[in-house]
Image 1 (cartoon, rainbow, N blue to C red):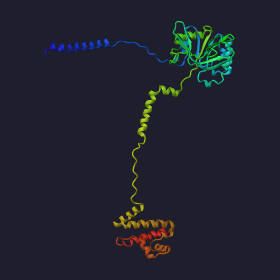
Image 2 (cartoon, one colour; image 1 turned 135 degrees about the vertical axis):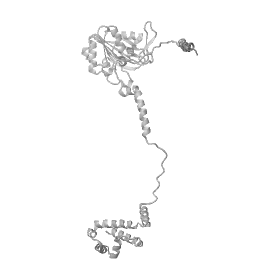
Image 3 (tube, helix red, strand yellow; image 1 turned 90 degrees about the horizontal axis):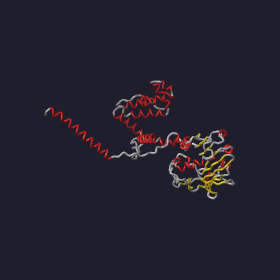
Image 4 (cartoon, rainbow, N blue to C red; image 1 turned 90 degrees about the vertical axis):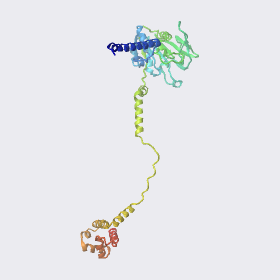
Length: 386
């Protein structure tokens, strides 16, 4: 192979690789098309816990002074004559003193926006000082109310909201009637106004879609028009106080819903460890085999074994030791004697012949196998009578 041929081979490989790469890129560009789509991310920051965040930002953009807070903890005396107070929470939480102070502030020129109590009807027997002072009577949950805005498609509001009626009070503006109940009413009180609504979801940021509501909240043009009419009395004159009553979820619910990537593997690991460490239940074990011999049989067999192999001296020594040990405890004087004196004392004590006692205390020889049993039995007899 010449040098020119060797130099041309890498160039051909590079050209082939470039051609394949060009074909792949051209196929990808021709086959796939860039498409942009929108993904609605969950709210973050204040928008996650403030349901009136969109209303707050819209009012600020319109040059209105806004004060948003989670609870109604401000002093009523600090409210201005042309301020507006929007209570998103249940009006049953207001006691009689604060309800009376609020109505006095409204009479001086304030504007109060409240809603009817949510929830089941059986809970409406509770005291409601604010609504009772307005002579308002909550009614049952009603159907949707039609609402039409010029240039917008037909729309409905207050679906599944609690309607209300009045006793001897004539609203300045009202939406509904006395027979079916009102969904909105504006009451004049002194120099100010009180707006009562069956529901205030149109003022909120929005949420899951439900009957009569697509979940757009204040972003819908119809809701913006309705909110502008509700906030009209003191709009642009004073401060808008928005009380949204934050209800934070419990710690256990947060851990359960958002902490599962941590607690689920730990729970599986704990279950696996408990499975490995737990007692395994297999087939029933057979009962243990009963002992084939009793203790006395073992002792007898051991003695017969020693006697058979001419170890009777060991048996006699054990019996003699047991007798002398008890003798030292029961009769120390006889135990201190030796020889014939000890044998004579034992013979008188047990009423036995002296010669027999002497033989019992002496170790037998291998030739005295016949007298072995007599000596052992005599030692046992004397031991038992001590």
